[in-house]
Every structure is written in structure tokens, then in C-alpha cells.
Image: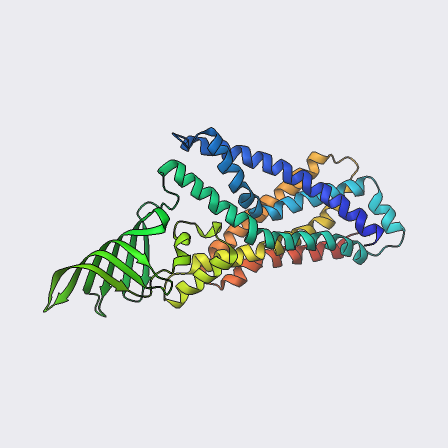
Length: 357
């Protein structure tokens, strides 16, 4: 690693760390105050603080593009204000060499973001939600209010609750014919889940259409196939945003293969997968912006941060609009996820071309 690369890397790491700590403190405090409203019984202030710290990395991960943007502006604008970048330019160092020095730490952070969202933030978020459910409801596997619905062809399944050890309970299954008439309705008290998507319903009440009428049968047990696999049960109590990338993609493709609505899962997967690329594009965009801000002697740090914050807010609002329009227009999730990064990179390339170096 060259002297220039080490120097730029040290400056960027300082800027990113300062921004990370400030953003973490602000958002952590706001999240703690908001979560205090739910505190009662065993879920007291200490448990709320623990929960907040455990879910904070996932929240900060979604802010990674803004954190890297602000940190880069702090670092490079400071170097420009101190004439370090001017000295580097006058020494004959080409802009491509500067960009390469910036790309080294940016590439490392990008890889760490991908690894972190799979191995750190998602598992930590899941443990936090399990802790919260256990302390608030005495059950770490509580499903969302109203249970979970799923569809497979003309079969509709409703899972009402999840008992300890992830035992499904209060299960309803409805099967319709091609004309939309109810052919079969099943209610089971509990179920034993097999590894091959086969469930063994226990304490079953089955209604089957016979001779044009629904007749009721009582059964001790009944086996039904092509339901949720055992490894997918934890997914049912989670939002797509809190899942590992591998689980998110696997569950989304399973839903799509079963003719179910998988858009939210696959869209979230591609958006999260593209997030580190968007963060890297933000660093690229911050380079010419920082040089311009730092060249103005009268600009204070607050002004630089204000400009960065405005860019960050614009990015966030623009991304939300793009994601919403992509869903509304039925565009490919991968294209929608990559669009913010591509637009930011294009703007950065245009500014770099016009940058005085």
C-alpha cells in the first residue's frame, strides 16, 4: 500500500468513524425513547436499552450510504481546506491515482457491509426480536397480530399462533375448486412439522364437500404436504428487513415457485444486496463535492455537513420514490435496486469530469 493510499485511508476512516458514532448516538437515543412507550413488566428500561442496542446495527446498515457520504465529505473537505489535496495535485499525482487510493478503503468497507448484513446485523436483530417477544408476551416466537396467511394455488393456509419450541397452533386450511367453491376446510389445534414440508395436523376438524354439502369429520391426525419447512418457521415472525440475505432469497424464490406473492421478499433482497454498491457510489459522489466545498475558505464544518445532509435526504427520498414506482409499475426488482447506485455513479462521473484538479 502506497503512502498516498495509507494517508487517504486514514483520513477517510476518521471521517467515517466520527459520522458513524454521531449517527449511532442520535438514532440510538431516539429509538430508545420511542421504545420506552412499550416498556412494562419484565420488559423494563434495561431490557429496552438492550433491545435498542441489538437492533441499532440493522438500522445503521440502512444508513450506510449517508454515513459514508458525510464521512467522506468531512475527510476530503478537511484535506482540501488544509491544502493537502492541492499539494497532491501539484505533485503531479493524477486524479485516477487519487480515486484508486479512495477505492481501497471503500472496497473493504463495501465487502464488510455484505458480510455484516449476513452474519451480524440480521441474526442480532432476530435475537433482539425474540428477546422482546419473550419479555413482553412470554413467548419468543409470537406471530404478528392476526397470524400469517399463505396461498399455494387454490389452497389457503392460516397459521394463528406459534407455541414454545416453534410448535404451530390454531391452523386453518381452505381448498377451493376451479369455480371458486369451497371444497375442503380443515382446522387443527397443533401440528408437527417435518423436514420435507409435510405437516402432521393434530386434533383435526375436517369439512369436505360431499354430494353438494359440506360434511364434518373429526380426526386425531391428518398429514398435509407442501407447507412451510421447519427452517422457514422463524421467518414467519420476522419482517423481510430483519432476515439474512440467504434466507430472504431462499424464501422469496420458494414463494414465487409456489405462485405466491414474493415481491416484498425479493425486492428487499435485491435492495439490501445493492446497498453496499450504493454506499460506494456515495463515496465517489462525495469526492468532487468535498473538493469543491473545501476550496471555499469561508466554509465551516457545519456548512459541509449541511450540504452532505441535504444530499443524503435527497438520496433517501429519491430511493423511496424509485422503489415505490418500481413496485407499482412491476419493474424487475434487480433493476429497481440498482437504479439509485447507477444514478449516483453517473452524477459522480459527471462531476469528476468537471472537477478542477
